[in-house]
Image (cartoon, rainbow, N blue to C red; front, side):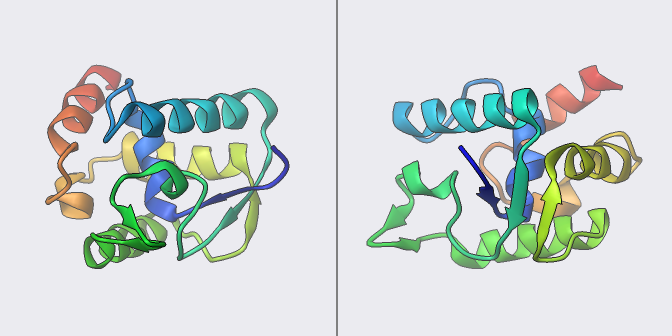
Length: 130
């Protein structure tokens, strides 16, 4: 992979990913992206449309996310808290911002993505990280 395109909230999701997902294809794709990010520190383009994670999501129907209203709120919340703009960054810088400003902070992640179906898993993992 060269440049990886990600929605802001997917940077938070990847911190709590433990192999659960919407489908086997989705899990394999996300795992591959995370490996690339953490191994090679690529350039990441923050975008507000379907990204490299979305392409294998079964909720992407005819090129449209069926949960787009929720997803946009998650993106806005993460962007605001981590101070991201829709531009390119070095992955390690993005990850450090996510860790410092969200994961390791006192912010209740339910305020970011309370209606996400994975929130309970994320909260459990976060407790173990502290």
